[in-house]
Length: 183
Image (cartoon, rainbow, N blue to C red; front, side, top):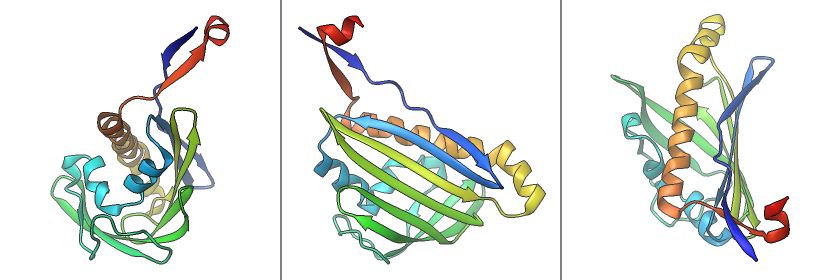
């Protein structure tokens, strides 16, 4: 006999070491590895999973369905705060098909931005891990901004992303056998 249990709701956490912050979020989705890769490795889908208030817009020549590749430069316009519009340029630095890709900021609001996107197949879906290592500019002022604005905003953006991915693909449900359900 089996029963269904909803997967734990993912949480967005941020840790700090030597002035570098690391945001981590793990999420399970009930989709195939192929579908997860197809969606997540297409930069044009970013707008769909980014909060509207960010006014996210890709400004480089990136077409839906294009294959992501190492060395790809993607430019954006975003509004991190009301009335502030800025450019952000990232480079796709690593790609291992249907396993992971990494984007790094080349120009933008952070002193450093290194975003790893991991996708692993699991029974009934995929387990995704986002790990972002970033550094805020402006020394002590940046540190204050991290605690007052930046950290909370990033947690909100990734929480929104979790919710949108659940809305698009559904919520992962783990199948349990009777013996593990009773444990």
